[in-house]
Length: 231
Image 1 (cartoon, rainbow, N blue to C red):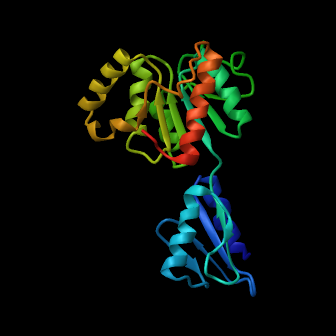
Image 2 (image 1 turned 90 degrees about the vertical axis):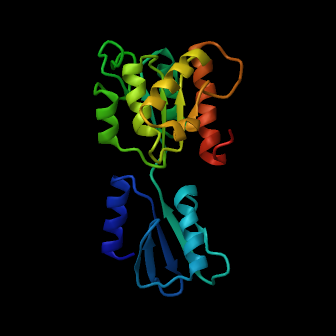
Image 3 (image 1 turned 180 degrees about the vertical axis):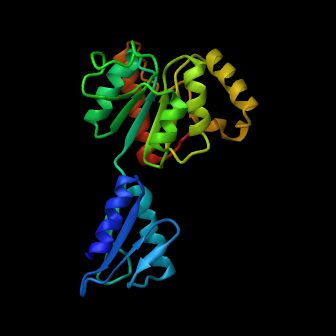
């Protein structure tokens, strides 16, 4: 692979931007493509472009169907879980998600909650959620869960996440709490996007303890990541 292509891939991974490299194995001629552009010496048919771009979301690498000697390798961001609210559920969820291969960031401006003692080894930020999400970015490999039970923290995060490309949005709370949340989000002009929020959050496993609820949340995040929305 040429140095310019390697540099572009490295920069894309730093920015959490997915790319696919397609290589003709017989001579090494390549092209790099994203959702909108194609660069390189290798010319692909419309069908080959469509198939290669499908890998931007799946992250798979594979030979292109119906094409002799064309191999597509996907360079996609690692899965990431952004947790708003450093509550008890977040303590268990952050450890489980990290073990499952997610990059985890816990967001909570309340220093007594988001402490290294409560979240050893987990990336923490004491920024307000809107500030943290603006800095971190919201891409298609990211899931966001709002767990704080505080509208001052959860609502700004949801307002940014709903129109974004994140693959999962979940919010903790009772049905009554969620109805009030939806009223506030409607007032913010997000009526058409409210169906994206998973609430009650997590798969219905019947668990009640913070760790059991964390298992249900992570299970739903993984299910949506691989199978898409099902509600």
